[in-house]
Length: 303
Image (cartoon, rainbow, N blue to C red; front, side):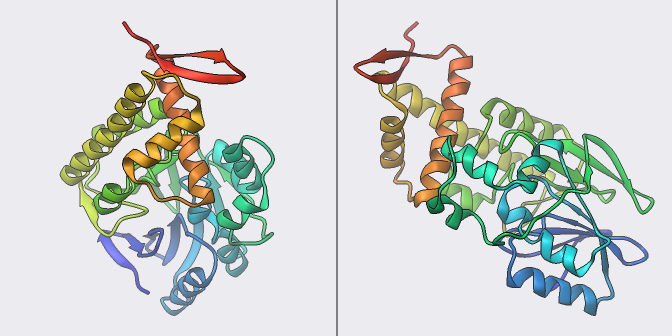
């Protein structure tokens, strides 16, 4: 394990979730998305100790376990470290069972919980809520950007070196080609966030789930591929709903048509995304619903 320099004082550590590291001149550090708990954060801590690096801050781009799970291990190793997140993310980070409730639409169960969480009962507390705008730490300015859509409280952070960490707004092209039914809580906000990133002044982006650091031109190309993925599923939903059907029948068709692989967790992730797509189309007045034969059916409005 080692620090990979992006530019200037901005680095990242490769992993299932890439972790951002901004190294201050005094060898204090700001971390971005430490990842899952377990062996990897232990190795990170060993590396920090060997390099005489002292993590002082953690910025969580959103609340998902694969981004925040290691916070408690790093906090145990560095008790003075301050953990940051958005207001919306804070709620779910501190009470992760609420995310399970949200995904299921009711009280969580063991089938989902055992797939989602790896830190047992270790509690994570957010020390400071951060909002869009300037964040100054250790005499260095960072910019916090609202990038809602994947979750309601998703943020990005732009370092003074022009390096953007955007959480799960974008995934690597190779991953996108296999898993293009994105987990989205709000489709409208997600599309707005893609446009926000296009308009930002940055030089490089580090994807949380990707093998390459991208420059802005490659980022814009990747954004267009993400928009195409969203458009693909919007079109499929409109086409399928020419025959009225309920959410789970529609989800079955989406899974079959796209040969999506899934487990218990991923089924409910897909379902959450599908409901978000339906809500977006309803807001656009593209679909309607009816109650029929003890069922709730959505259908495409013909104009």
